[in-house]
Length: 141
Image 1 (cartoon, rainbow, N blue to C red):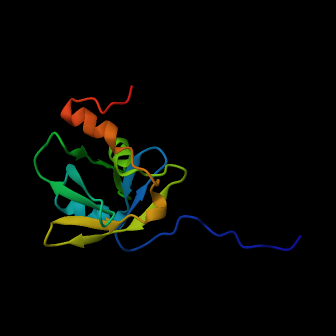
Image 2 (cartoon, rainbow, N blue to C red):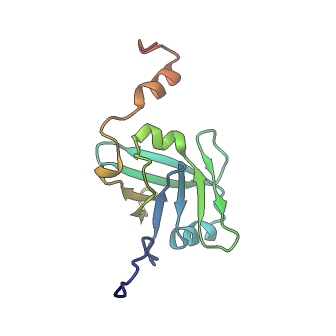
């Protein structure tokens, strides 16, 4: 049998990136984490622009009930947080973990990245979230 070269699925990058994984976690790579570590960031807000399919990760300095607590890797190689409810909200397709490039938006003071349409299910599971927020039933039993 001839030799074949194994291609790694995970590629290391020197630019900021995040991974949406199968377990509902968002992980930031080492480049993105370095920016957060400089400011000793403990919490982030997650923002979503559905029309552009953009995710925003905004560092904050004070605890906020809407914020996620960052967990930093012990070797300094990344940070992450559990965001399953957010991923359900945007209709993320959990069949595999996927990475996206992000950039630091100085004007908005946050990381911004576009989630490709193929990473999302065709139908979002939003009515349940809206029902919880409003306290009203949507008619589903």
